[in-house]
Length: 117
Length: 115
Image (spheres, each protein chain N blue to C red):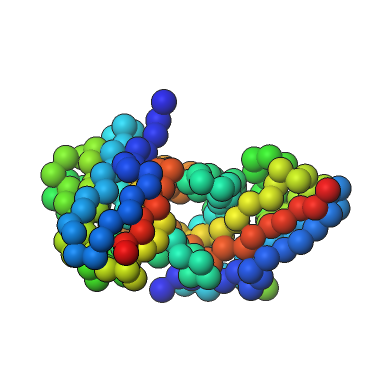
């Protein structure tokens, strides 16, 4: 089965500094990878995805993610963090059931990002 | 506006009292799913549906039921809630094409407390 791992429960960074939120994946075949963000009392919002193509993917709110096949990683990055980026971030991978063709997303455990002023 | 609507947003109930959390989407999506979110465990899928009258268990289905009688609605039923079902619940929908492009569209969540 496809899976993703987020090794850090929390990441702390000062405003203006670059940030990285880590994600590693385990898949058979080519991975379809996603990042979502969850603000307090809100549902998850799509940030960006990797299907094929360039290893550096750009998404919403100035975020980008780097796909690294040799390290099986898909880390989320931003060159300059904002206090408003403080939220819970989830990495996810698409999983498809062979017998039914049903597609679903399998999520990591989430990483809380705290950006201090 | 394209959206997934869950109700209620907050619910406190007592052990054993049957309850239903409703979910509706207006995007004509064939896929719908229920997830629960618990600290340190991330989002875990409870049940999913590929289309009307087609449902299947996810990773944590015990204690839950679902039905998909209409394409837009996918209610989550707790026949006899227990305190270990206290959690934050999300409904999500997608089409096959949409899942490839941006994954799921999520509802705003239902925070359930069972006492």
